[in-house]
Image (cartoon, helix red, strand yellow):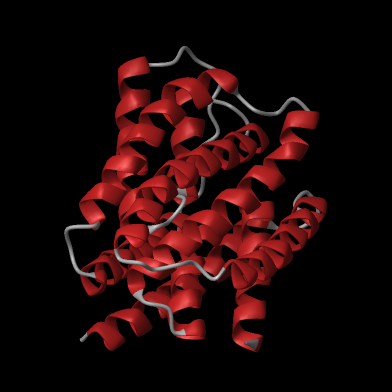
Length: 247
């Protein structure tokens, strides 16, 4: 249980500091820390990640750092495709989903080693924005990750917004994607007479929310590039472990 509590702290801290990364840890924490089945872990992760992200986004709402046009043009297609991704996930084995997640984690680790470009504000390419949103949503629904490691740099590239705006906008998108994916997974679990462990979800979510607030408080004071690289190395090691277990 100690590993799960540490994992919950890392999930919240990562979302608070980077606006990404924490969600991708939730599924392996539930599978290897609590022994959840793959699909149960994905469904639970969507609830946990959605609630932590929504709560973390409140600060951005208060400070008016959420880019609502991007939430609309990126988030709505992403929300719809998250449901489709969850539907697709119901037709493959849980081990296949974990394999895909491990590969996604390696990609995320590589992406986090890359510096985010600084762009000046520009007009949105609505088609490109919607297409990227669809891809992120499919990933969210299929393997239960928020996709923040893709969303944050995509938002910076698409609209030239600041990192702070991108992080808070990403948190809103993650929360609506997670909600959409969970709706489908809940239907799948109900069909199989499976029930989520809401008490455990509540504990992990509460710890994650506290961690996210702490992360937000220190986000401007900490060297984000170094933190990203350390977190990327941790993700890569976790992914290698998951691939080993799969083999």
